Length: 327
Image 1 (cartoon, rainbow, N blue to C red):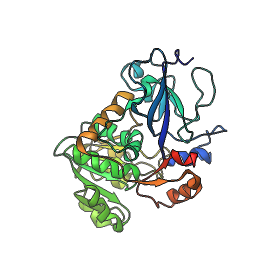
Image 2: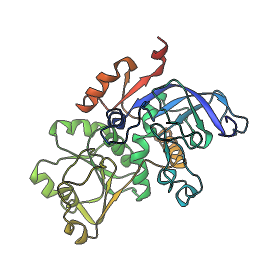
Image 3: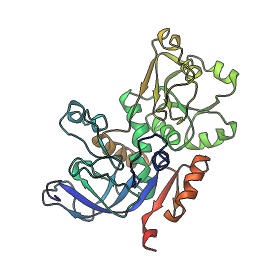
Image 4: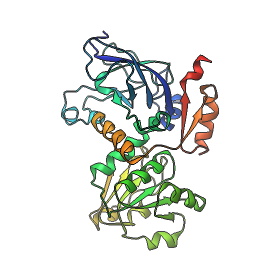
């Protein structure tokens, strides 16, 4: 099986706590399967390889992101868009394995076996702990900005100042855009500028929102809970694009179609990124010195970390040092 899977066995000292781990652990999406082992942003060294493995060798620094397999034959997979696999991708945890049907287990464990196609190289320039969130938060925000062609001079608004939002600001700036943070809290203005935002709009201030009407080319919406899209759509220019990456719940209140029709605006969604693009964003981060802001975590304190994440008390990702499992 080890050879047939073309697998790499990786002992990983680092994994990241993502808000989706909380949703799954508490079955807030209604799709959790127990026993459940979360964690889908994993970095470590390869400790063993199968006989047919050619891309990685023992000792390599590698990463495993949100997926560990796909059909690899459909139209999406053929375009390196495994996240949109028409048969459904095999996620890093809580998904039936394509080989033996067992439930996949994620990065809170101390080792993982993965097909080499879904293992990416971690550039030496990157700090391992700060690089790990790039495998989810990073690719989730990089992929839509790249896909929709954000370029130098574009006006990009980033909605939300969390783990996704602060990465979106960094990427848009590195692409040469003029970046504005939208936040409900005026207290986050200084933090937004520290992350690289050129401007900050407090979205609860009606006058600030009115002044921004028709201004933006792109909005990267990282807000993970229901919120009214209509006021934000009004800040887009004609042909502007509002990209959802944080919200997977029904839109509430209802979307006013005139906000799209009258200016030929686009409301779009985006899901993580393919494996080739995940390698691309890691290399982009190494080139531009981009990492995620993190706080190291002893896994013994995971319940406290979940509570703090829900309260927004982390900037911006908890990273588990798996070496503490041996303590």
